[in-house]
Length: 416
Length: 146
Image (cartoon, rainbow over all chains, first blue to last red; front, side):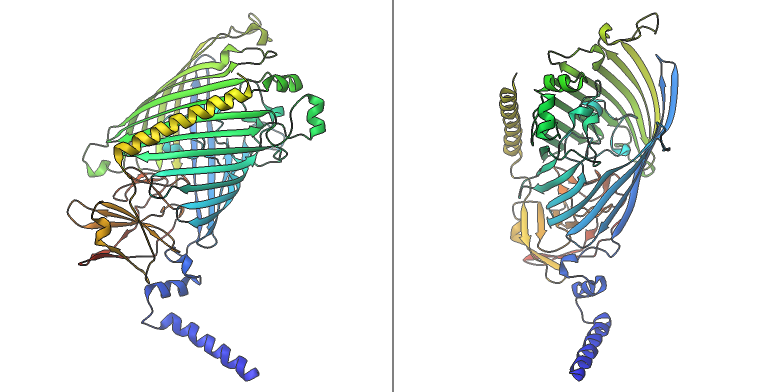
């Protein structure tokens, strides 16, 4: 028996040594031996842990307040690791406003994503963990080098609360033979208890931290690519009460998976050709039981809200045939946004005209290389009138509310 | 509007808009992605010339391999084969109307494989193509990641 074992080990050792040196192996065989994996890993290099990131900083002048602010808005670090050709880990860790001190208001450290990706094929995969659902244009692709304007679009901040991530599973794929991508997701729901007047449902997201899991949400998206266009439609339906049935009943709320639901629909379009680009999005949110939420929590929430924007941009360097400018971009853009965070309020709500807003943003972006951006813009804001019922400090205690304001922004961003 | 009517109206509108967009674009542009499924032999892939008779582009889908290949006929009659895996974080790419996109961080590449949008910094890996009488032979390579 001992002899047999020794012989087997000797044979194994021989094969290992000869496998590394034998000159007539095919490249595929060499690859398999070198990476120590099965043939499923063929084609992927051995360097499997990836570190990258992005960040942005800005200066902003608020002309009505006469106040200027400068901050390192965010620095985000990606870490990804490929366990094998089928299973990969991705994460994004974000530090907002540079500094976080215990008990002090200010910055934030948060995981933006942390999930495992299970690849069924090169066009179909499942993610599980803290992931960003495909809703809107910015949520999934929010790197500062990939959007115009120092600030993220308001519609995709307050109506679609990017960067919106939740815990759950998502399936992503492509319809065979068509440039049609799909995604569906099942995630934890929202918490209407945390909704705040004036920020939509942004504060009701759990972002992976003690998410209410008595309730659920489903989301789905379709993306279609044709010529120089990308079209997308997406939807979301989720419960907003994660309480027990007893707790919800006592507050007059509907519990269960999709109790006291919130619905969101979005459609968007992007176009890019010859230096010219355009994008447009429209989104609508409804919470039919807002009356019950207001009654339970007195947070003056919306029943319906909507937002839309359109942007046109032109890269002046695109058509200048100069080697030095090939990697550079100099973009002028204009974006018009309109939104109303209380387009319909429940009977027990108080209408707030300041949440009906129009923004006109005009600016420039310069990319000396593709992953560095210097941006500047001016944002003109117009809102509806302030409701005196919502103003605890009326004039002359405080300055009267001004429906017009303007902002000057200057920022830098990077990704790698 | 109550919940039931909202869901009904919203879903109907989305289906109508989506179907309209989908059908109109499909009709005007025809089948957008011509696909050929095969397996690699060692580190080579063979694509019969007949597969490219009616299309200048072929998405070569490989079983049990780390990436698919975008095979494109060039105006000069040569063929360009690209490894369809993002050079930033090794995510598979989707074919768009005029290039390729990565859903993970938003990198975009044009039809030649050159970077159009970061964070990817390197162009897609070009794979050698040998033109034989009845087929194209693509030499697969190990793709550098990150």
